Image: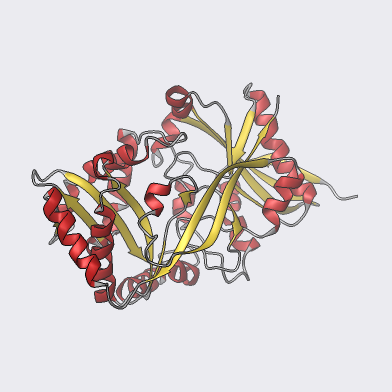
Length: 375
């Protein structure tokens, strides 16, 4: 008789098993993109992940007949509870073989953890905060994953639904092909908007010049998304970590910033060359040769990913997105980029989706979180 057992991750060796499991599960899948192994390990280190300062988390491994068959993490974000009044157990980093006994054992583990903490709801897959990966893929299994999106087998959502979990939130992603030439009306509209609101595009000569705008970017993110029911403001610790770790990786040419006549930042957008194939080739490691694949992808690439956008509420629906898009188009023409893939956007976040509406966006991926009330 088959037997499924679940153990809590307690040491470094088990944590490495936890991190590497999806790489083995998707070993021959051409669409899966691995994460950096060291980054995945550091997520669970309070010294590296500021969200751990106000969260508690555990990781678990599932074995079937003594063979590793799945994993799951459970998280309680106390900041979310204090600021939004949302009390739930987040589950994430969930992967499993196509065996309902294994997926059930993992979900049962999340349920047991919630009961232990006197919490009545679980939801996932999601990370610690709004800036982490979230949402189980439900459309786009045959499309190459990105660095900022979770990839999973088609059987995953079927398992969760069979276990009684229901849709909680839905994200959509779009792909668009950039036009060779922008219509004259777009150029004229950009000039009209810029003159009417006295706006200008900031040009950066070095990465150092960008640093003074990083905090205003985070402020704009808070202003842009604070109306969403699930959004929690970015903490000072998170700002510091993201500034130190991630902004140094971004090519300054791929950052678009728009300011008013008082030099106040009113909008920004960050895109990056697609590093999906580079990550596949590097197998989640920069050394010894992974850095070479990333260098090549940064210099020559016909695909890019859209990462972040922030627009002050006072300027939303006033044509500022047109200015951003024109600047992105100019950059992509220069770099030889033909295709852009957006980041996951909450289905109800229509204001961000307006950025693409005039450029033939194709909704090629969808993802969702699943929840279960366990009263």
